[in-house]
View (cartoon, rainbow, N blue to C red):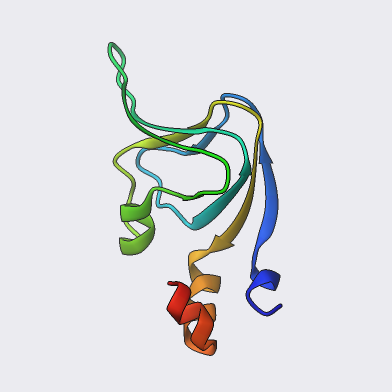
Length: 104
């Protein structure tokens, strides 16, 4: 219950940008339903390099871990429902629970 209380539900519209290049990733997300694309934007050629699907954890992980700006973007390819926990709340879960630290 303690861990679950730190997650919030969010819905992203089809084609909505979730994380922008140059922004710091502040949320780890668990995808309830939907598809998320990882890509490097460019005026002439975008480079798609990964996808995340239902029942997977996702985020701009390197940005999330280091709390530095992301080198790429995340985009919802379909309406996407996620459960998110902030970096700060995840640190609380790690510090205050053994199971949270194990999951991490």
